[in-house]
Image 1 (cartoon, rainbow, N blue to C red):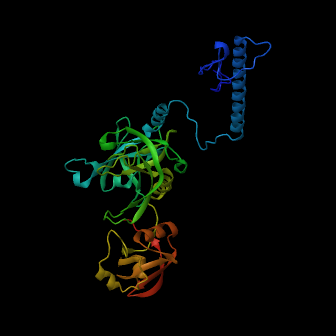
Image 2: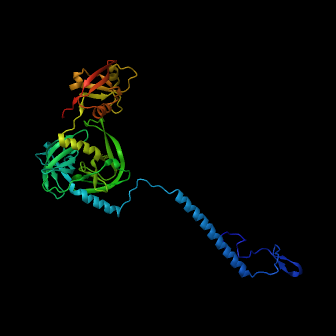
Image 3: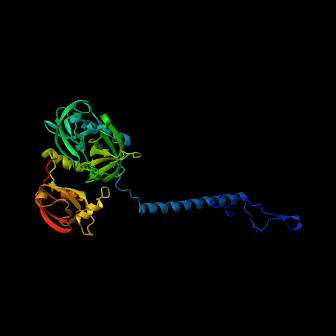
Amino acid sequence: MGLFQDDFYSTKVSRRKERKGTKGSTTRGWSVRKSRRSMPTWQISAICSLLSAVFAVLLFSLLTGQLTHETAQNPAKIENVTSSSGDPYDRIIQAAALVRPAVVSIINHKEDNKELNILDESALGSGVIYKKDAKKAYIITNNHVIEGSSKLEVVTIDGEARKATLVGADKVSDIAVLSIDAKGINTIAQIGDSSKLRLGETVIAIGNPLGLGDSLTSGIVSYTERMIPVSLNQDGVYDWEQEVIQTDAAINEGNSGGALVDLEGKVIGINTMKISDTGVEGLGFAIPSNHVMENADELAEKGKIARSYLGVYSVDLNNPYVPLAEDQRKELNLPASIKDGVVVLDAVGPAKDAGLKLNDVITKFDNEPITSTLSLRKYLYDSTKIGDELKITYYRNGVVKQVVVKLLEKPEE
């Protein structure tokens, strides 16, 4: 059979209905013109087969040449892909080996459990040794790991317990820096560039979950710049936002303050929290290393993060979670056009000196809309400096007013 299934290239003879010819002879259903020199059947078959083969080869060559030409003209493009060397699981082993000696366990001895020597889950955490000098080694961790401590203790990878000193802590960024004796500390973590992270990149979480120190899990980067709401006062009202790296690497109680590491063995985040609820899995978060280092360096140098301070305690005018009662809104006597703003509950410091009072409704800073306590705090921390003069637009008993306030440094809490 040739390339095409038709009678022209077939060497088989079709069986068709025979009909009687003259003088008892039989002929086919069509007439065949005989040549004076008839060619043997086997030669015809051989020629047909040869023609079929030649035709098939020519057709295949033509198609292949066309496809090759098109492929050369329009090659497939795969961008931003880094070639990996060797077994990816072996890369995890190598990356972990680089950073593990720099990850420590932190024990927070609190006042309320000092006498009974009881350690609950909130008293356990992790930290990362990120620099050292001749006398001290410095450790990054979370503020909530060391909060409320009466004594801090660090346990190194070889099981040695050392007394730790708090250098500085910041509640807003949830970063703290500790120091320990540098003797015997031979490894410090390399800090990576978190802005170069990609979705799906393999990462490792190293820390002290549930007191199981030097524990390692792996996963991927699920999201690079996730904004999550935070209640700084733990009162259920979200008054801050934290930018975090989302990962499905297992993070549990005690992992806080530990390292999130890329396959180069560089710390690209500090593990800080996870979402723990029924039916929820694989939602862990880490503070990006670029944000961490900005705060850690200032904490190591000054012991605190200096921020602008206005001095108002407030509630949102339009908060879907904690809405104002109807009689409270009427008491403010606001124009119907005012839907968003911040209601002053108390004024101290610069705000009090400027004359702000209970039930004043702040709507603008320097002509920028202020719609919530979150936007108020973000504007103060991100757009102003200590000593700046801030123009505030507010409503008092339905009348719009303006005042200029000189911002001071936020006092330590």
